Image 1 (cartoon, rainbow, N blue to C red):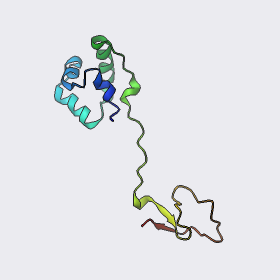
Image 2: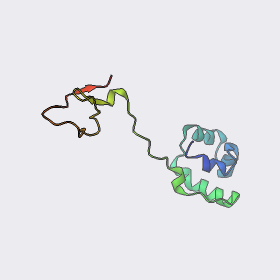
Image 3: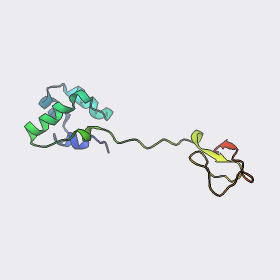
Image 4: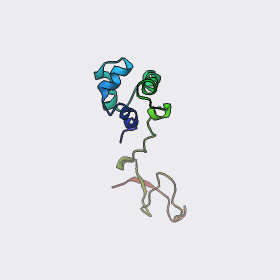
Length: 108
């Protein structure tokens, strides 16, 4: 779900209606929705239009996307040669330096 859905919901998810209320071309507002990003220079204008025309209050925090989860790809996973545990995030506690040197290899 896009973090912008509550913003577009004020206009019943109609980008043309939102565009008309903020004085921008419909194609521009549709592109924002498709990209999942509204440029910051338009935020206050949208907040004002939502309150003035639709009677609904929006908050600046609704325009900010949540932090994405870190992407873990097989190339980024490091596994210990001896114990086969992941060691890319932190060293496993089950091994000691003497019996598990944590020589790194890419995950298969």
